[in-house]
Image (cartoon, rainbow, N blue to C red; front, side, top):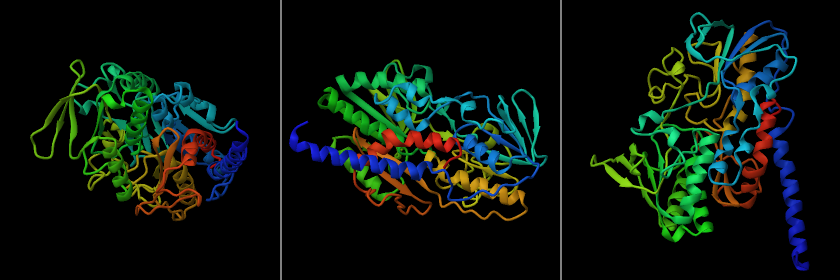
Length: 445
């Protein structure tokens, strides 16, 4: 380090250290903004799903209801840190960084928790019971549905998830294994260039910013690895935009165009010929579009799991009925018909809420309102729809976008301008959010 650089670097390190402490205190503080009263009620609560929402809720309920019986129903054993998959798929993290352990590693020891390693296949809320794929019927007093989201790759004719990583086919969403294989294809493309196509479906999706992060990071890898001048990048959206907030939608589109990208709207991926590297899209004018590609990033249409969407718990009319999303009140997250049922996470049919940040903020709401219900009171906690997207624009730079149901910006940190790219927002995404997430699983957020 040069002598005149030392004060700058030291100041930057002090800023980072202080900022990390501030952020970590916010994200993983030991006390929730909503204090959960302790109760000695002898109740049985079934939790469907062992993702971030299910495990976080189980940890909180084990503290608040020490005499309750908790049953978690889920066949999955490995826990995935889903927010890190974009970093794996673009070569910035090894796959192991998104595999923090088994689900059982994050459950409280000594608590009255029964883990049923089966999958719920049907709900009977009139009888307060669920049925599993092993034929077991489980009765409950209260039910929390945290079963996540279903990737509908089958809606794209010719799509084969086992082919991800070959013939230029990529998809960040499927799993850590396929994210790693996607990087193999993106790495090759970043050196050779060619026609790259990135897609966005018309359905609600988990982490709406992930398709944009994949595009921006691939652009950056092209520039770093020599393929940019030989690349023709394209973003095809099934909707009329690329992001739900108008200012950021315009920012992304303009940034894409600055990088000579072709951006098409109302252009939906319908089929793929993987061997030929050809993709066919439906278009707004009905003519359709078939094109070759060297790299294709597939974002599958998404919906609620079959067990939810074919049950009495799903929305039957309105905008959320098409995906079979769980019918909960957007403010209390209590089911609109069955008072002893709550939902949390991606499965919910709410205007926003398919991010880890939303889980972080909504878990205390669900627990508080469930405790109110058990106590015979009306739910008192209200959820404002908080969601957050650390939108990565290049390696080392991001924008921390936080907003509510009304799409108002609600920044947590005064020193981060959500409408400006910053190094600190990148540091939050790359270094801080995973420790915060692990704290959330333990019920410490």
